[in-house]
Image (tube, rainbow, N blue to C red; front, top):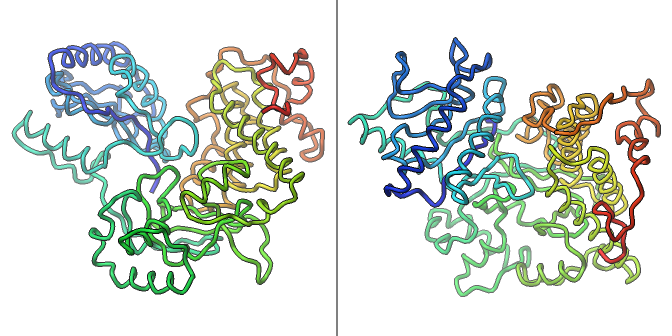
Length: 487
């Protein structure tokens, strides 16, 4: 259970003279930066963060270790720079949470020396430029580690019961959940893999049944000369947001698409199941629907996407609105996407506090007007949390984390990894790595009002009084203007 973050070096470094020298300078800066750093939440009794091969009590000469979290590490020998694939740790538990700020700061140093080869990833990331998963399979990472150890010492290290032990496949059983449905995949593979049928020949009975159901008009079928592959590709669902693997779920494949869906499909890595949660009350006899869209799109773009990818013309309630109402919806969707893009580009450490919160509140209002209650709602509250905590405003940050958690539970359940992370942040908001990182935080942040509901409290949360004091600007020059008709 839990989740990781880190960065990968991809493409892999070659052991050239130039790369060896660059890696040596990289290690020198790491040692200068962290050699004398002590952390009371670290793994060592004395709190020393960096564990070097030159330390008298250091038992491993192959790596430089950061003694926080799961002890992320890097090769100590510049001649072996081609074995530096990943620097990462689990960051979701009490003992591992302290690793995240170190990973992010080491990532910045690595970018200085290795440039675009350095790719940050965070397993809980759902939007923006950061990847949710690394570039390498864990097996590749551990195989490289074993090979390096053999090259350097002539033997492998027994990692049994170590904090950094190799990850393996886990067996899970469903936990208590509010999900409408739970399902394991009958097959799993990268969705674009051309050898899907070959890889899962042993799943023939499941695919045979799927073919029968398709022929009975239960499933949509993609035109493909190889029927099994066409069926599978049409019905595969991703094993996580932005995941590189997909699963074939015989039950969930029966759920149709709607651009204004009433249920959310989520891969829950904690329990190894695809979950379907209702986003709103569903009347008896009403069809359960999910979204096949990868992002928010206007009507014309949605129709093109669904036709190209899934071979059908969408006639859901949203797409069949009268023209005037559909154009209003398209305008709201453009505004929502515009704000989402602006928030994605926002630097919490330098941006205006009140302007950032104003953006988030505006987006939440637009989502409500559009009748959207999907993952965009908890993500928006999480954006507000990051803005508040970067400004050292723990009171507001806690409320935003609680609201994000409550919204995430509705669409994923309490047992999802993301819900667990948000619950942790709601309990201890100051543990987030952005805490007090804003360079221009407002002074004298006002305390909350006595009444915890009503307009006064809502205005306090979003700092509306402070926002109203902002100098007026024309919509032409105002980067926060999201109300123009020309968006």
